[in-house]
Image (cartoon, rainbow, N blue to C red; front, side):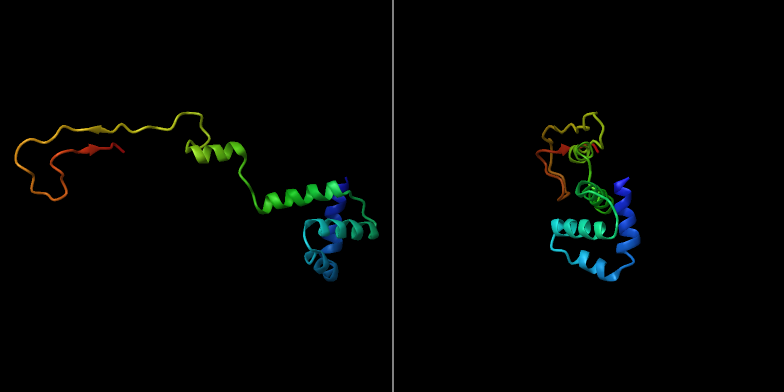
Length: 118
């Protein structure tokens, strides 16, 4: 219930009080913000703890700046999209040297051709 108390304090007291909002916005870092919010909340008759305030702040930050979970990061880094199936491989093979007169195309190397199938 106390996290809801902070939300009520913020929505009903901070957002409607420009001076208090400015002081919270100007707080020098997270700890200063927490101390000021706890003091202002208590003086306004709201009851919430430091831990509850941090939980609300963390949840809000996660909503604003979402981060991928470890399993989501593994899927992105591994390129498997979260699947445990191995990534597809491509077989590369060397073709034999061409025999006969050289080809006229400047794009063809007459000795070795490497083909990739994708």
